[in-house]
Amino acid sequence: MREAVAILDRRRPDFEYDGEMSAEVALNQALMRDRYPFCRLTGPANVLIMPGLDSANLSSQLLEQVGGGKRIGPLLMGLDKPAQIVEMGGTVSDFVNLAALAAHEAIT
Image (tube, rainbow, N blue to C red; front, side):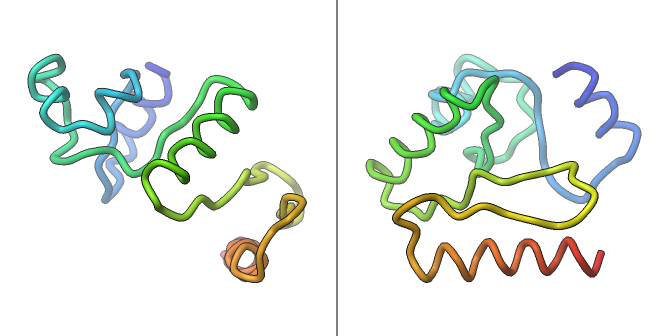
């Protein structure tokens, strides 16, 4: 994780990012300011990177149900050709979102 942050620091992207922190801190700005005052984020995180597939799947399903947001993924990355997989029971919206991501990868 430290190496990923160092790479981002060198590339100077046009988005906010930070390193390792618990999900409760990343999603709660009051906790973030109290427990992590040196945080680079100006608000709650909108992207979480998980250490493994099981924790990512469980967390994303919980966030979607509790938070009422829209979950996109899992996302495939690092393939030679752009491709995405829609989970069983995926909606039309899921298909459109993942097709748009794959199309974007194809043109970039």
